[in-house]
Length: 230
Image (cartoon, rainbow, N blue to C red; front, top):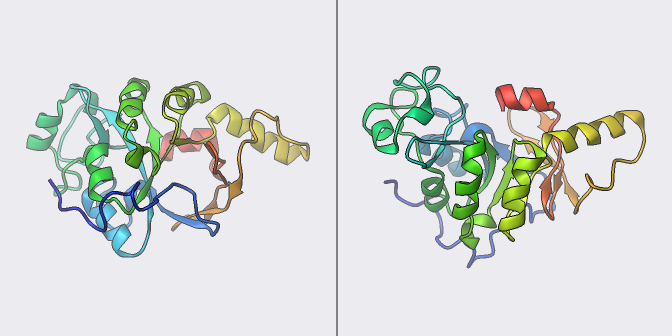
């Protein structure tokens, strides 16, 4: 649907989420300050500015397609109404535009169209877990993705079934890590995995460590804030 930007074949070129040792600038909702959120236009403008890390959200359509969208309802930011999950992808393509102009892309389209970009993907639906794991069986996709924004149990599914994908700290682990930091005590061993790298959230002045081996670490936003505004 959209012409691919940048080089093709991320895996062949060694693309890997979190491989850098410098702070990572991550475009929230794909670059929502530049264009309608979670859309090809936002992804395109962010990458044109040099960003190589994009955060997006994933919902499941009525016919089981993973799409980049944040809300349960279409009403806030699109020309449609009602629950996204009650519409098929074809219906969304026909009737719904984000910000009045942009189509809702599938996650696979985003990954294929922007092969130079890595994606932090917030799981917004429990039902999206299994389809996500299936999509990420493609290694060139999996190595550019960190699955985030969910409960620990949700994240265990892709972590255990997709060997090359990274997963964030779940909300329970995130609370444990923040609580330990505030108390000045070592965090539970189950929370601390891999290496930590600084990551910057553009336009928010927020930083969140990334545990590069398997987990993306805590944002300065709390778990509830991440649910409501992530």
